Image (tube, rainbow, N blue to C red):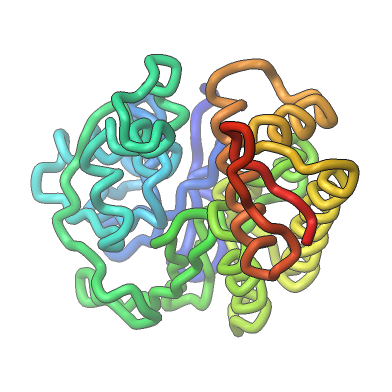
Length: 304
């Protein structure tokens, strides 16, 4: 990995540049991280960038539990034993237990070996020292500095965004950059209704900029959110078009989506695609556009 550097956004708000944009808020010689990177190697590079700029990690706020956001926790907790780590109550179990996410993908059965990897769960457990509860918009104070917590469910149930005193939003994976949207034709969200609500919420936030973990700093927030809404509607319509021909099982829908977009034939890609399809079917059922029935030993979706 190329050497990471701190990129200034505004005031004391920065992000650590690289394949992912790790949020950083500095005060005196301390750094508060917003997410921690995907693994120990990434965390080491972030730490080097902080030290080169004269800072040391003092706290981490995890926006959500996915390993590319909390996989560096264990490194920082080992090397800075007094570091404070914040996450919401819903995300905490998945950060602390690396087997929980793979189990969820297997309906809580013993997880397949192909799902026990750094793409789906942190490889080392870490302890959330400061759970954020209840799950609502409010402020928290770290080292005398007030941060606004904004609930942004949809990608995961307990995801949050953080607004710094500089009025900069760090939104986790509520939004993705344009290159990520182009690379991944099906965006990973687990609750489509809440995702759309989070998009509308983000559009109204009076912030001066937004840092995307997968996309860096953006300022055209309404435009980006409209692109995301359009993408969600496009995927919804594609699923409905498939179902207009005949009722389909979840596996059949997953297959059609993977073939349509040439999604790679591997366990992780299949699992993430199928999970997203399930989220859309749940949304379409809520909207009374499809019905889910068990027929001939298969759970099928059909147009109402």
